[in-house]
Amino acid sequence: MDVNSHAEELASDLGVDKTEVKADLENLLEYSVPIDEAVQSVRRKHGGGGGGSSPTPESVDVSAITTDHGNVTVTARVLTRGTRTIRYQGDDLTIREGEVADETGTISYTAWQDFGFEPGDSLTIGNAGVREWDGEPELNLNESTTVAIADESVAVDERVGGDRDLVDITAGDRGRNVEVRVLEVEQKTISGRDGETEILEGVVGDETAKLPFTDWDPTPALEPGAALRIEDVYVREFRGVPSVNLTEFTTVTPLAEPVAVADDAPRVSVAEAVASGGMFDVELVGNVLEVRDGSGLIERCPECGRVVQNGQCRSHGEVDGEDDLRVKAIVDDGTETVTVVLDDELTAEVYGGGLADALAAATEAMDKDVVAASIADTLVGGAYRVRGSLSVDEYGATLDATAFEPADDDPAVTARATLAEVRE
Ligand SMILES: [Zn+2]
Image 1 (cartoon, rainbow, N blue to C red):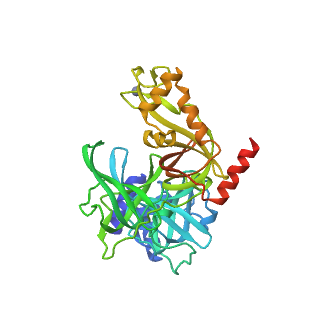
Image 2: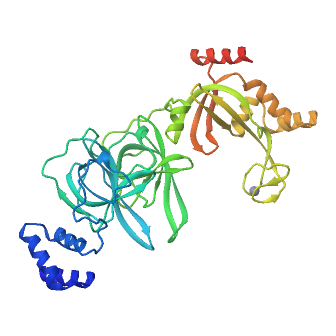
Image 3: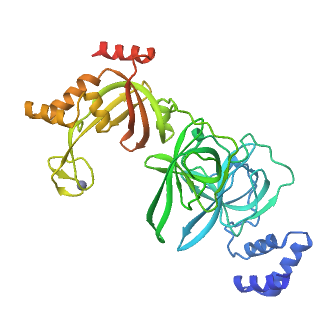
């Protein structure tokens, strides 16, 4: 478009005289202002959007940006850039999101159009909107925003680029790259917003951790055992733990070398796992303080598997419950407590008998609670090594155990256990 057509468009958009906006435009172009920026500037002068009341928003340090700012201008380095499609007011929109930083701090951004920048670029971002996202200020790069290469490279302390070990991946991350081995993969059909869709679900691992993944645009290279570099994934919480999401924008490249995967789960403290908001396949060691109600011999709804209380399912009303074994144990590792849930198999191990034995004991005593009481006798006061996925909700932390063993060999834990017994 030439100056004339821009002027025409602006005049009609803003409802002002064309000769006036054309004069304004030509004036700016004379000072070598790029045409797009000049258009925005004229638009703002005549009150036609652009958000800010001032034509050039305040230039600020990243750390000084608050949600009180309407619009800002920042000079910053692009750390990461992820691509994703979201449904916005009925339309599929491709957005770019990630973080930028300067010497003072880091801020995340969402770009509603492709400005063409990449991680490592130093930019002057003019007239970016500021909105609150997850309680923090975030930059919104929209049609009123100008993006230009900065005069000088911006020095930052943070790592440029999205490469991360799995242990450092957390929900909310965007534009991340990982090098992993595919450990499990399963094809699934889900009913999505556009009807039935095939997706892949599974688990990937590296030397630091394992994480579940979902591939929304199934990639044939995702086979068990494959060593892959996977670029541009985003991370969201799924069943309480971070999950790696692959999309149509994700690239998957086979690696020449195999990726080593640790057999052991990373050992964490309960406080650490809780602070991270949930972790997949971790190990912790602590003392059983209590075996909670709803342990031992329980009944489950045949429809949904929920635990039935007094013959009533929360969703299905009165049902003929099915017998099952479970333990909900409160474990304390000195930093915080977690409710550890043992399934029927792990429960049978700590009880020393299966469902038939439990039913026989309950019949003989004419009391179901004898099973839970016997389990409590075994567990309470003891130190245990627990492995599984830890999730956090408003009721606290829960660990779904995949392994549960005595931890007699851990001196610190044994000392604490003795102390706990002495206190009782
Ligand atoms: Zn039910």
